[in-house]
Length: 189
Ligand SMILES: C[S@@+](CC[C@H](N)C(=O)[O-])C[C@H]1O[C@@H](n2cnc3c(N)ncnc32)[C@H](O)[C@@H]1O
Image (cartoon, rainbow, N blue to C red; front, side):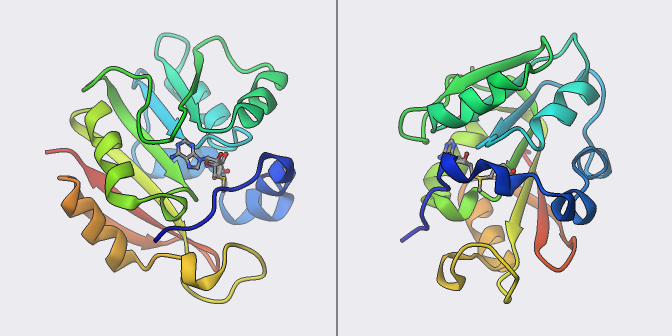
């Protein structure tokens, strides 16, 4: 059983001064290895919170895929005039992305794994990753927070590690980021 997908009508909640303070997007991506020239995919890009800084970090010569199951969310991103290296990509069911196999150096999956069947979802992420590529998963801590998904929909880091292993992705580290979120960094061997 998995959680509900976030509704596009609430997209403004994804970008608040508080969230920018506790989860600074560019610094978080760099901290976990995103570099100039890497191709990057933001799966469940939402309003583009990580997408815009990711596209700037990798630079014009590298693709930054914005994948979302919601066309409304992709329209929110389009309305913000993304950099020229951003490729908007709709996925109908959320388990098949329109991205070539073994083509991406870095994948961001922020506040999204808990909304899906984790192993089915992570296996599709594995498919698009190059050998040695990095996956940054960010999830809600399974503790009471001011906002966020219901407790029963949240995932503990140990569960995420187990789902990653079942998807043939190797967990490198788990880091508590702040009162709301933790990160799990994984690699494709
Ligand atoms: C809670 S929002 C997080 C947005 C963004 N990652 C962030 O951290 O600000 C989750 C987003 O993922 C999208 N989504 C959920 N499941 C998805 C899937 N399987 N494939 C693509 N997009 C998905 C939703 O439409 C929504 O835009």
